[in-house]
Image 1: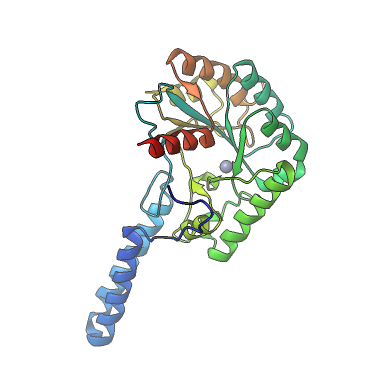
Image 2: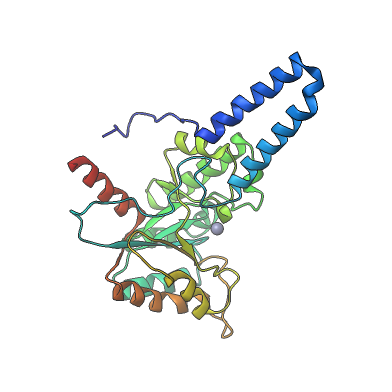
Length: 282
Ligand SMILES: [Zn+2]
């Protein structure tokens, strides 16, 4: 097993390596055969469109590693697990009710928190951790233009959220989810430097815009299976016709469906530990 204290190095994925080669070839062609410049330019533009599309596709692995499911744990683990991930909090109105619902069902969840909100509600962030859940990094400000930031600005956003989470809870976040799942090729080297793993999801309920708990539940439980990562929101939550946050109506039914399918909700950290112990034994 790799020693966690050794700073891992970023290894460019094939798409990035191919892009670098293409840029060099385009520059070489333009210098040696100037008449080819329109073709060289077209190739570079097409490459940038492809890189942008990969960043706008939250579940893509073209820009680097990305958890869209829990890692395999082998047959030794009889527990079949899913991860409930809850984004954009902590929210002083919604999060305490979410914690109470999870407690009723003895369920563990992963909260991808916004650093500024953690700093504004440190007691609530501590409570999340004290109740056995995990807080992970969802950037400091949740900027809509996050995927347009350069490497330095991305690193500032991510390190600021790490600091906010550590100051409030004493915990170091291990996972990162990009705002709205949107990113660019500069993100992965920053995540390697900050020791964070990128996580997207298997399925999401679109519960920031969909006001129908039944429809959100239907999207999350459609083909529910071992290893799924499910996405809900305690912050920026859509409201039902009755005025409550959608997650509060969805969670009890979702937890019942998970139990009925013989699955156990675990945190991403637990899933990583289980996968690691299986890999060590193997
Ligand atoms: Zn978010």
